[in-house]
Image 1 (tube, rainbow, N blue to C red):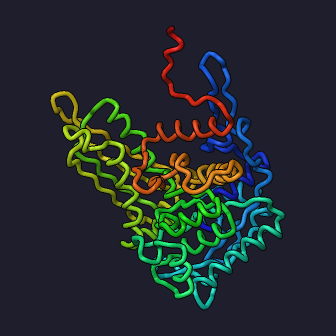
Image 2 (image 1 turned 60 degrees about the vertical axis):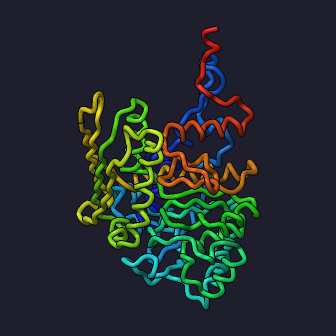
Image 3 (image 1 turned 180 degrees about the vertical axis):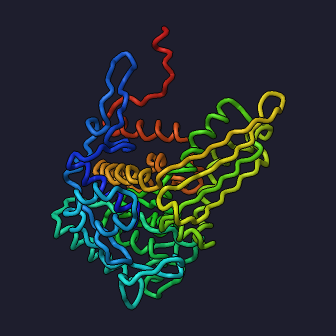
Length: 417
């Protein structure tokens, strides 16, 4: 229950009380065009599809620290103290459950509020008990789990991840290749709870858990919230490609001082983050198709922990491009953002859309939610779509499809017949 989770929870509680607006949330403020431009049908998304109202949301969390949501939000130093004081009662009532934690996967932090069990299977059973007790206590008819926790160290799928049977045997044998996030995901999927992965962790991106999601008809999505610097890349890179401007190099560096920054000081956790950050440009620019423009461009990403900044992340980008006849140009970006302020509306949208997907009978990977992630999950063998504008079109067309409306292609020839 760190900065992202508490900013999300406190934000929803503030919106319920009329103390703020859900800026950045597609589900709350976004609209969707229906039919032809001449029809003038553009309802809000929340009025078009049956999304759960914010008033019906209850929050349950796990954390390695015992602080309640109010105390954790104060410690995160994202939201103003004056606002938090007005939310103290509902936030103080949210007490985290003991977490599943393994120092081998997150090396830079530790805490006392952790579960103890004979093996990882028993830990998964304990998480399932937590979920069932939370549902009973709060009278919830449906649930969604979203990982807002720390970035785990990089690891690749192993033998234990190849089948559900092998995975469950691995849980019982304490297989070291099963990460804490995978224990949570397994528990959620066994109980048919939709799961979203907001970190670059491997988590559900393995055959065993993909099979479980399909078998139990559970929607899943991930991975790694697209908020700061990578969000900027998915905005700008499609523009360079659309105008066929070349790229020689893109150097990115970040400073941030929250718990995420501290965790990413560990090389293993940073590698997980680096993998998702580096993949974006290659997929958008497609150097194999455009060798004159993008072959062998240099791309580097750096992240530095700088405590004075707290949650106020700063990302610098130096971009060397070239145009007509190969003449060089440069673009400089200095994005002074607030990491959790950008992430919180994404969490809200994912929770509501995953719940909608399950009610619509959708299961397995929800590629239409790629809009929210740095490294979108896709069907095996299918490359991910990173262009944010294509992602948004895909998301809205999925909503149109759900409601039996015509899909929008933007062809528009009928206006000129």
